[in-house]
Image (cartoon, helix red, strand yellow):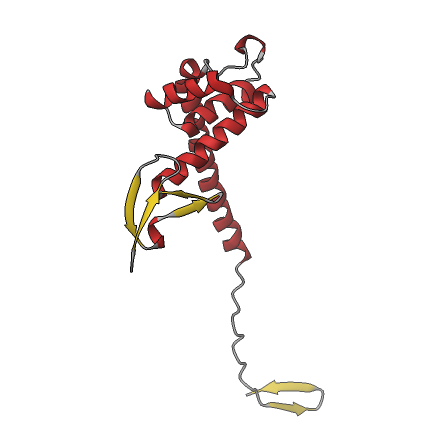
Amino acid sequence: MATVGVKCYYCKSESNKVGKDEVIRLESKNFHPSCAQLYLDRKELYETICRIFNIKAPGPKNNAFVSKFFHEGMTYKGMTGTLIYFYDIKKNSIKNSNEGIGIIPYVYEEAKKYYETKNIMEQKGKEQLEQLDKIINKEKEVHYVRAQKREKKNHIFHGAKEFEW
């Protein structure tokens, strides 16, 4: 197999990979497998920013915030979840935000705890539903038991009375 030079759209590094298994194509762009997920997560974050603030593009201010927060250790998924938590779930107003995402570092841990608790509750609910399903399915189980054959009895009719031997 020939060696193919691939430049990753996300990280811009060029690497020599053997075969097509090492390259992921998204939107007619090449990605390393690890970079593809980061690209999709960042894209989702930008779409969330645009939806929440009703803007066409995040703009340079938000791009700078995203880059800064990412280098501080926050994930794109975490930032997306934080914005959804703060504006959609808690119903906070976007008036004081100036179409910026500067609130993220102040709410990030609170949102993280919210989602962790939610996941735990969903898991417990799922386990309880599974237990309930097992109980219901147990009650629905039908066991077929063959009836035992009866012994034939010789009957002698003597007049109007019946006698068994």
